[in-house]
Amino acid sequence: MELFDSHCHLDDEKFDEDREQIIQEIKEDGVTKLVSAGYSVESSKKASKLSDQYEFIYATAGVSPNDISQTKEELWKMIEEIKNIASQNKKIVAIGEIGLDYYWNQENKELQKLAFIKQIELANELSLPIVIHTRKANEDTLQILKQIQVSKKGIFHCCSLKGDLLKQAIELGFYISFAGPITFKNSKNADEMIGIVPDDRILVETDSPYLSPEPLRGTRNDSRNVKYMAQKIAEVKQIDVATVAKITYENAERIFNIM
Ligand code: NI
Image (cartoon, rainbow, N blue to C red; front, side, top):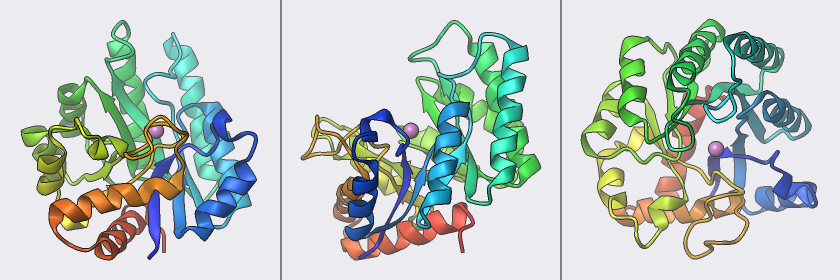
């Protein structure tokens, strides 16, 4: 069984001491492709470098709503740097993670929206999909996606959209990626959410080193744990885990345009 971790952060400092070792173990464990997601200029550079070093690692480049600057002028510079990173490396497979986060930041909603829109335009210019981070901002996120054409579509990462909003995201053509929270015992809507997503739009991710799934909560997460998300989906959809591995792998290759 081979798995594709559609979203992790291998550049994170929590991997500084044993990164090479962990990357080796991830691959040996059957996670034969993964995407290390950038969230700032610095982390996008690091993710891009990792994708140069390891054949099975791909990367994204983008500035998350929690990493944008205070002023528009600085923001344009950041996005220019993201453009340079993304256009210089063919293994940058998406612009992201980008989006809106009103949980951590409520003071700069307009600048967050501007950063999101500008980076969607960049993705369109480079013919790349987007990876969306949204937290406590689901309505505004969907509003923007309805207003602006996203030519290569993209992924709702660590998705927590429920019911109607989740259906809207799928109708707009987006893929849905599930992380550790769907395995948590107190997750009320996980089964409902998984049930809504069609088989050809579902992805699995770890968002590691954070958000370890059950039964490993509280420990450092890494891509090997993506199997717990696949198991949860298999239970809910009542199909075997090998089938979930196969469909999520093919879906990830399709949306990231990896041959
Ligand atoms: Ni992330």
